[in-house]
Length: 75
Image (cartoon, rainbow, N blue to C red; front, top):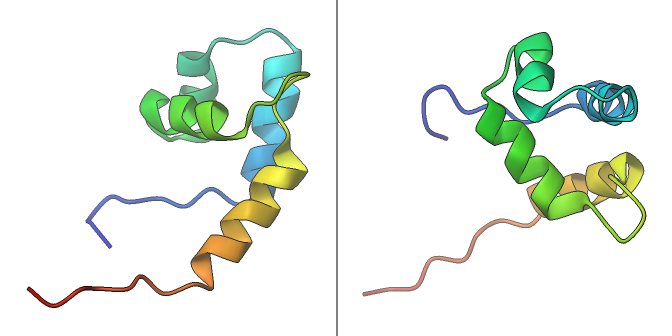
């Protein structure tokens, strides 16, 4: 994992949802959570559906992805 890499927790995803509902910008949410604004943008890009940010589905997807090891192909 690259240095400085941060996986969002369920609590952070709940906070993102609440802060989005209160009208804060992505940059302000990042500052509040202590993560870079691009982390918030990627999270929202990946997990925003037709209605809004889906923090429960985002956590489930992240949990499922962390259990699947990456397959490396021989060169």
